Length: 211
Length: 185
Image (cartoon, rainbow over all chains, first blue to last red; front, side):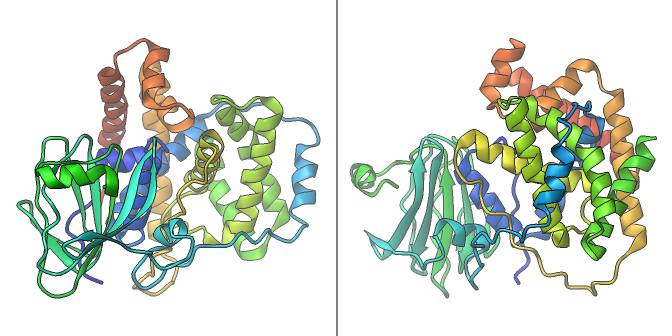
């Protein structure tokens, strides 16, 4: 595993651990935590606060048969929900939204491909395939965007991002990531609002590609 | 009192994990079920549906106990996460994101008692720190960790502008972090 050098910002990690984050961001962060022990530990630290608050919580009275009901239930065999299984490339949270299938890429032009995984009021989530040496069209954001590298690497003015690395782009950042030479780059990208492209043509294409 | 009880719960969860100990599971139920019900009723759930979710959470504790790792969480934090995921799931009427993969431990899987104890001490310090918070900070923290409300609804409840709520949450967390700082190795 390559060493991860770009992590989830603290405020997003806390929001994830306390369940206060858009679904698209939550899936991406769960995927990053599958690859990054450091963020996993920080997330667990926040959950420790949740545990301490639970310890301090008042005790509600329960109906008298609740205990027996539970002990009857544990005698039953466990339900077997279909577990998403990680593939070599895609961590379990990504395989889960892919419903266990390989991506069905749609061409975006210039060799760039994408698959939209989620797109609703709760944000958008998509996989991007960027051939080595190619640029992702320049764009500004209406909201924050997280990008997680799953294969290959890309670079922009902030640095170089490899498998497991996450780039957090704010409202005011214009960035032009370019896939490094070598392996083609595959990323998972999450927004909580549609992206706004700078260049005229991509802007016209935006509603078509829903990028 | 809380010290003993909370770390005893971690012992009980390990007994459930390693020996499927039903008596220990009963102690987990007696400790957590009333607290979980109270936590769940802060959100949209009413009495009987909160009890159904408590059943669900405790059943998950029984079936998923093999995944509990005392090096990474105490029983309270682990059960909090299960309950929180279930609560979000119900609130949003959509499946929560799948949990991260279990990371492969590069070291040997030998238990490390010092790490387990250290984590329990840290949890105890957290409980002490929470007791020292002002009622306002405590309320804000509980809303962030327990309620199934988005931030803007937290704001309208407290009649504070959103920025203030966010910074108060952070303030609460920062104060907790400060309390914990001298324990970090």
